[in-house]
Image (cartoon, rainbow over all chains, first blue to last red; front, side, top):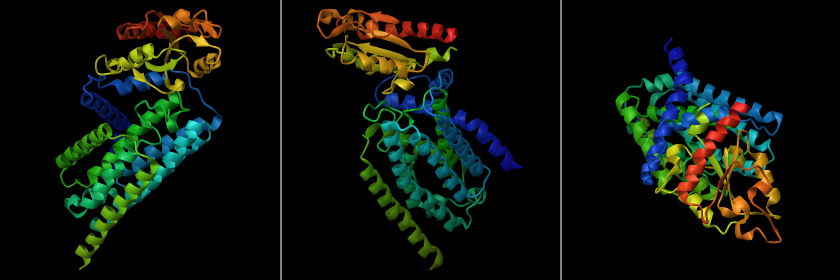
Length: 285
Length: 140
């Protein structure tokens, strides 16, 4: 029964919490740049405004792909918070991302297509580490089920420090923050325009923003799994990791895709696979 | 809806400006004036924006560009002509290749005179434009 409640809570509350985190993010970012910054509720104002704007769709598939994208993101997060299989969660997330790429390709706009190609590269960089973290959690707890991983009782971070650092590294890619905001960026950048979201306007753009909040809560949930032995430590860890992401976002310029791919895979191989090797020998010898 | 007033996203186009007004527009985004306090975001994309800021006069080469940008923006939208050149053509009005102010090409809602227009005046014009945006949204 509790799985149903947590799932309903996720579907209803994730946009609220995600929006608030984004609002705080924008204030902290502004303070780091010695600006005053917008109100905390600014992301909600933006989304409500976008729903009131004209919906400019390029073709009839455009909105359809976008709805599929949102449905799969919500499904992925719901499975996670219902305590289901972590692998299915990750695969649903990949499918969702693919729909966004399809939506961007369907427009034939050059900016949109460049954004879509970069989004594919971002997926290529980030997904191996996502899967490895699921494998790492399985090696320690003996289960892919989120509910069993969360109730394992021991601090998983002590078994999987390398995997955790790798996950935090690719979190920058997944949250679309600098230096890895290649496909689209929250800040105005002229040379990319808006990348993958260029052709979305009005309500469609609002849906993308809401989807981003759902995805953010899901990813922070994955961070929480490493500290699930103590909920207070878990929440502190989430806030700390997000703060680190904001600091990195504000202190780094966007890199080229080659560096993103190479560094992400290097981190995945050295920290992720290395951690799993060590763990295997510790557990079996 | 009141949300339009709280989140005006701007798009900035340089007609044939001397860059004086452009720098003043960008100065509004710096820590000194920080228009993000009011929810203003400088987007790089006309499809995402509500307010079109144009500096400089319109000439025969950028006439169709301005029209295209205007068409790409979703309703409701407003146009602000920043600086004397954008308002009337300024000292370039008599040039053989200059059509004149922005209103020779697309409808303009707010004019700001000045060479260059002050950042305070630009912020004030955006606030005025918000009232016009709301009226336009009620009409649609």
